[in-house]
Length: 446
Length: 194
Image 1 (cartoon, helix red, strand yellow):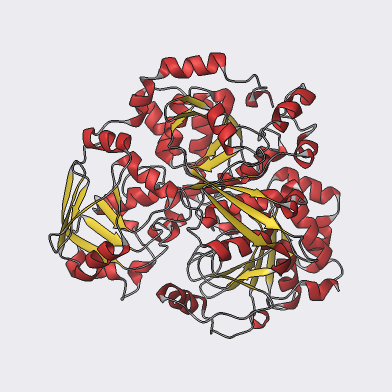
Image 2 (image 1 turned 120 degrees about the horizontal axis):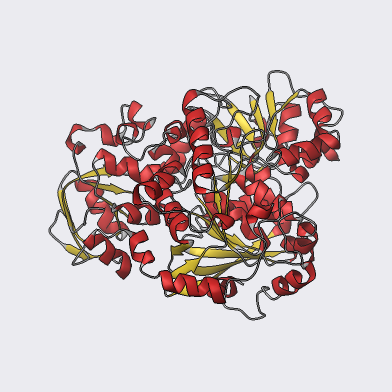
C-alpha cells in the first residue's frame, strides 16, 4: 500500500507531490513570513486548509496576548495568501487531525502533511500522512511538493481479538511498550490483522495517531468497507463516490508484499494499558505494578513521576482527568467514557475535563446528550482544541499534579511544568475519574 | 542559509536518551511568531535544575552537542533546532535522531551526525574535549584523534556544503511539478469547495 501511494506521488527523483496541506497557527507564521520575504505565493491554496487549534482557549473568553497575536497572524496570513481557514468560532473549527477526516478532505491514497507530528493520524484512511517542520511547511506552500527519501516499511501484525474493556489505545500503547519509542524510526508502519480490521475509523485513527510515539513518521491502515462507509456523504469527498471507492479499493496491500521489518503483537494478551513514566514506551498493564528501573532513563522517569517500583498501578491516585486530543477526542471516545460515567460521580478532589476534538464533535455529542452525562457527573465540558494535551492554552497541570490523560505524550512538563501524566484510553480515564485512582475499567463494567 | 563545512571545538555532553523536543523548547515559547531568539529558552525547565549537564561552565560556548539515542523525539516543532542553533550549536552527535527532527535540522543547516554508541560514549566521557565534524569528508575526529566516518544523504550534504535554499532548488524543477499536476494529479473536488 505504501509503495502504491508513494509511486503515485513521485513528481521525479526524490520529489513527492502533496495532495493536502493542513495548517495551524503554531508552526505556520514563520513559513508565511518566508514566502512573503521571497515574494512567493501559496502555490496551491486549493490543497491547503487551515484551522486554529493548538493555543485556543477552550473555556470561552479570549486567549492570552501572545496566543491572540498568533491567531491573528494566522487569520491575516490565510487571507493574504488565499487559504481557507476555520478560525475560532467557526462550526468546523477543531483539532486539525480531527477535522480533516470528519470533513472528508482526508481520503485514501492521498499524501497529507502538516506542521504537526500527529499528522500520522490520517494514515488510518490509507493515506501517506506525516508531520513536518516549519521550513518544510514553507516548502510545501511554495511548491506543493517535498524532498523525501523513501523510508523503510514495517508491518505490525495484530493477531487475535481485543478482550472486553480493551481498545485501540491499549493496542497502540502495548505496541509502543513492545517496540520502544524509536522502534519505528526510519519506517512507515502498516497496521494489519483482524483486530485492526475490526476497529472503527476512530479506533484506527487512535492507532495511526501514535505512530510517531513509536518513532515512525507515518502509519497506514488499508482502506476497506469501514473506511468507505465512514467517508460517504462527508462534504469533501468526490461526487462520483462509487468511482472513488473503486480507486481506493486498489490501494490494499498485495498478498505477499514485502516489508523491511515485521512485528507481531498478541492482542488477547493486552489488558488495558497505562503509562507510568515520561515517554510513551514506559507502559504497563493496569493489572501490573510500577516496574523496576532498567536504566538511568527509567530512574529519572520514576523520580519525576514520584513513583516507587512495585507499587500496584491501581494504587496510584490522580488529581486530574483529561479526555480529549487528536488521539482520543472523537465522538466514539466521548461515548465510551460517557458509558462508564453515566450514573456515577467524579471522585472527591478530582478535577475532570472533556475537550471535544472539534466543534462538530461537540455539537454531535450535545445532540446525543453526552454533555449532560459529563456535566452531571462533575466533568467540565469545554470547546474544541488541543488544550491540555500540550498545555499551550491555560488548561495545564499545576506542579506535582497527576493526570489520567487520553492524550499521546507523557513527557516531562508536557501538560504543565512539574505535571505528571498517565496515558490511557477514554474508558480508563473515565474509570479513574470516578474512583480517584488508576482503575481497571473492567471492574466497573462487570 | 550559511554553507556548512567544518565544525570544530569543544563538545558539550548531554548523556540522556530520548531527549524530546518538549524538553528542548517547551510549549510556552511556541507562541512567538518569529524565527529567531529561541536560544535563551533552550532546555528551559532543565536548566533550572542544578545538576543539568549543560549548566557546567566548561560546556559554555561549545559548538558541538553530544547526546544519547533518539535525540529530538516527539513534537515536530522546528523551534527545537532553531533554539539549539541560536544557542550556539552547529552540530549534534548522537547514536540516533528522530526522523522529523533530523529533517528539520537539515533544513536550517544544523548538522546531525549519527555515530556508533561507543564513539558517542567517547565524546560524552571526554567532553569538553574537542572534536571536529568535517562534512566534506564525512568524517568525525574524536578527542582521541581517531577518525570515524558518518553517513549523510548525498543531496543534503551538497545542499549544506553550498548553503543552498531547498525551495529555490525545487523551483528549478517547476516544469516537472507542472507536468505532474497536468498529467497525473487525479481530479478531486477542491478543498476550498467545502
